[in-house]
Figure 1 (spheres, rainbow, N blue to C red):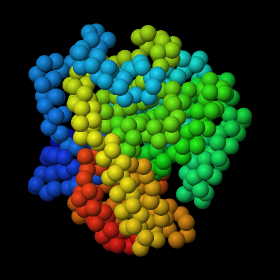
Figure 2: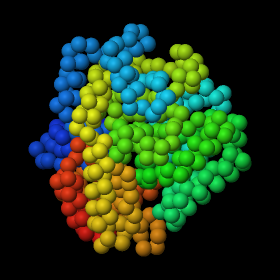
Figure 3: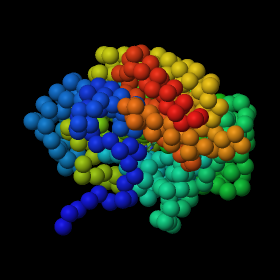
Length: 418
Ligand code: PMP
């Protein structure tokens, strides 16, 4: 028998990689690619950063698996201390699992246990993961939900302040979405039944749309007024990706729970939720856990990741390079009317494609994406219609590499007939 991979996997590019170094990936024939996907926003310190490699190698030779519900280990304790230095004030209790989805599940369990309420409110276009609970909170594309229901009940979907698609300014979109949220709280999900709002500070898989700070402030007000928890899903936006340590830092709003994964450990599987002690102590002891959570090698890699982010000033670099990338994308789009909206925050940058009749233009997006990949620039698409092409380079990216990517992108837009 010859086994093959299941067709359930959909691969965004035809590339098979052999190795990675910094912002580059190399295929099996030695061809070099500029990697502006970073493994979906994971390899923020670049591929195989020497400090991360060294820390992981050292840990592999010392202790690989120190199962945290059986025995405790130093890398996990040390990481918890270090995360205390970067987490929003007051979120001083941590709990570790392996993936973004698992951490979202953990946050949903905690929110329900702590409030004694069942409902969660998410915002149209949300992506919180693929496990059943997380998929129930996900509205970024029907493929995540199709054919697997019924999903977890108690989830209501409120409009997202998507200024471009709504044809509004950011402030108008924010005011509109808050009014709709109030309507939802008055008509569908009573505040007394609502445990939490789940929000990504930049809508990720749903189309790379930064959340206006006024909208986050409005969520905080409603959360305070009704005892609803504000959960910031920082799986994609955290760890410097947006040019601040957390995506929510751009708004000055304090979340009740932060979810982190992806950039946390440079590619080793690790995720965490953080919340204040008063909240965490309401969880049932032993109601969360897992065989691999807080793996020792992943924790060592996360500690090295934090060192690299701090020593190399990667958060500031993300802000600077993000501005360069966004302004370059806007310039590239000028001559291409179908490249209709350019937006982003830090090193989450995107171009949305729209046909002359105003409908989402996934075909042109796909052609531009393919032309870029063929020319050696790895990119991803996103959005429910697949008409948004996004760039998520490692946070170590430099000005030359940003410019190289922009030059390939301009050519790709021309080839795609955008
Ligand atoms: N939340 C957000 C905001 C994400 O972007 C993702 C992954 N794209 C997840 C949750 C799920 O993470 P994972 O794939 O590690 O389960």
